[in-house]
Amino acid sequence: MKKCSLPLLMLVFLISCSSDNGPAEVIPPDPIAGTWQLIELNISPPQDINGDGSTTSNILSDLDCVSGTLTFRSDKTWNLSFNGVNITTITGGLFNISCANFTSTGSGTWQLQNNQLTLFQGTTSIFYMLSGSRLTNSVGEDLPGFRSEVYEKQ
Image (tube, rainbow, N blue to C red):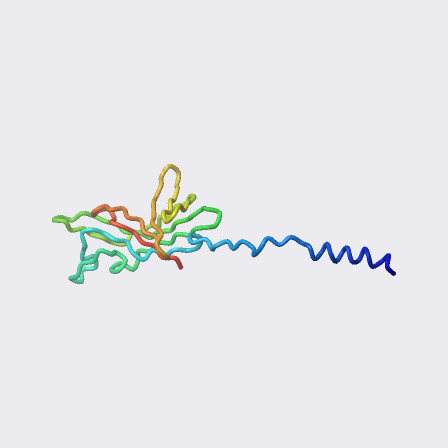
């Protein structure tokens, strides 16, 4: 009986001596991966887009046809679907801003360093700042260009 208990005792000892390097490393969730919706498409100077007598800087507040979705995957790729606008110069600093009859798409890879998100599409790089659940691309152009676009994580 003693001969059998020695191997059993050694087996129990080996199992109980497994290495313990402390708690498992916790990997934080990816702050970018997921779906982001366009919540602001800002212009300057403000315009009365829908003819109601009040001006706005955010096109989305007057045109419900404008939308955008950015999708980021954990493999560092992204896709964009954007239902945009047509902007035509009228005169005297006024512009006709209307729904476009097309959807723009794009795709590429992305990189996050500190709070700057860079989207790569071919030879083009697009820069966003991450602040909480918002991504902001500050283009800084006046009409007929855009001042900024803001996406919020869903």
